[in-house]
Amino acid sequence: MRADLHIHTHHSGDSNQKLEDIFREAQLRGLGGVAICDHNTIRGSLEAVRLAPKDVIVLKGIEVTSDEGHILALNVSEDIPRGRSAAETIDLIHTQGGIAVAAHPYRAWSGLGRKVIEANHFDAIEVMNGRNTKNGNRMSMKLATRLNKPFTGGSDAHRPESIGDAYTVFFDDVTSAEEMVKAIMSKQVMVEGTGRNRKETLRYGSKSIAKWMSRGMKRL
Image 1 (cartoon, rainbow, N blue to C red):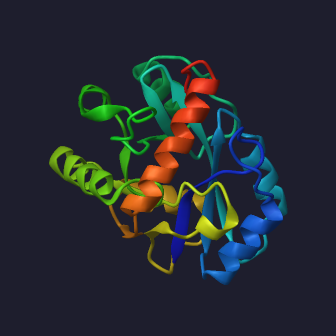
Image 2: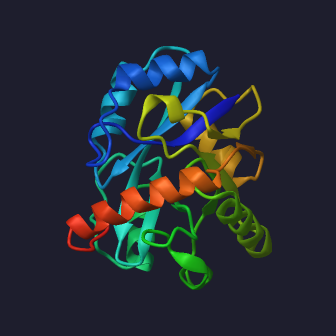
Image 3: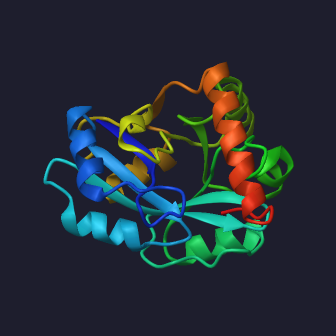
């Protein structure tokens, strides 16, 4: 089973995706699971659980803005406060029974970076992100391998056509969100997908920097 473990809905400030469009694209691309990870809110995930078609498993999630970078909180059911340290954010995720995943570690304006990841007890590292550069994904994989951390992969899609650009591969007998978490933690998964090419990177970088400056140089 293939599952895209990093998708945004209209509940994120930088996406207009509707759940019905996400589920339609997921089914068209043969995905059996998705994780809705909106910026600093669980609302999209809770709606997704309620509205999901029978053939798509929803793993609830949030992309939390810690004061050191973005962290994916998977398998949580309540909001995680933004602006806390990485260590405190991880503790809050664990309090809910969730797992803390270091999102796109080497992204300049929102990644945690190597030193923060090495200094904290992350459960997994996102090593394949559809909006990363290919080199960023390679570096993330190298870091996770060296630290002996589980992998995850997701498109980081903010629009339907990007869904499934990167994903996590589970065994076909995984049939629930809880089993997905167990598979990740036991390293019974693979990741596949692609990153951005040079042209896409330049366009994405320019757009992202402009938005970052318009927010007063604050992370989403």
